[in-house]
Image 1 (cartoon, rainbow, N blue to C red):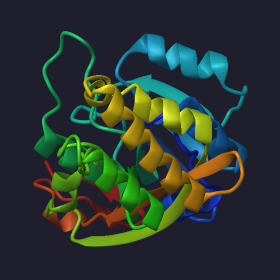
Image 2: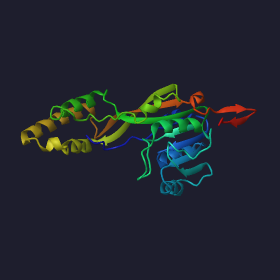
Image 3: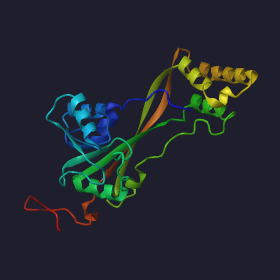
Image 4: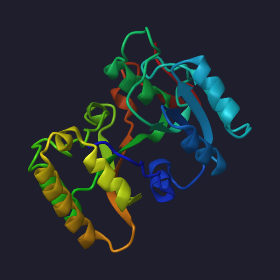
Amino acid sequence: MPAVTHPSLPQSALQWLVGAEPVQVVTLGCSRGVINRLVAQGHGVLAIEPDTQRCHQLRGDGPASEALFTAAGRADELPLQPCAAHVVLLGGPWRAQPGRPRINAHQAHGQLSRVLQPGGWVAGWQIVRDDTVPWVRRLIALMRTIDPDAMSGSAGNSHEDLLRSKYYPRIERHEFRLWAPITRRALVEMVSEQRVVSGLTDTERRQLMGELNQILDSAARMSELRLPYQMQCWRAYVDHHELTQPISFGDGSLVIPI
């Protein structure tokens, strides 16, 4: 069943991802809204995008600020100096410019480690439907009486391999409950428009919609319902000892053996 609305990133979650104090943040694949919020909260932002057009869009559509810089690059070929940021924030799956090879995940893990300062971390999130709410469980059960695969689309974490990488031995996780408002009418229409529903007989369709309305009656007496989601956040802390060419510091200067 397709989603009809997308819950926004709550402030509490964004603060958990990057920390409460202003720091230098590298973003990969983050939306303009998230980047603008980071800048407004005092963070310095280096936004890495797969092409120059996207870089120009970010600079043109966002608020003018000396705290925001953009650069075209890939996760496995970051155009940044070592230790350039305290946090790398991943807004979605790795993206490559059209026509170029796919991102090399192993090289990307090492590149992210290289650009992080000691004690820094890579952070990311995914939003999944929360099926623990009783009325949602009942809706899923109802839809699966006509389609066993209905409402089964909770995607896995696209960066799960990074969380198993030797470069990030310590992982922290935190979940936030999100609620996305939806009208009763919109939810009924969403169910009615499913292909499997259109194939039912008139009698079967009336029975299905009657049971659906009973579920919605028990969920809310008002015209607006709220769809529950879980925002699953994680932070992966860097360990520079695992780099092939380890980073070290001597007399306050950065040293990268060659």
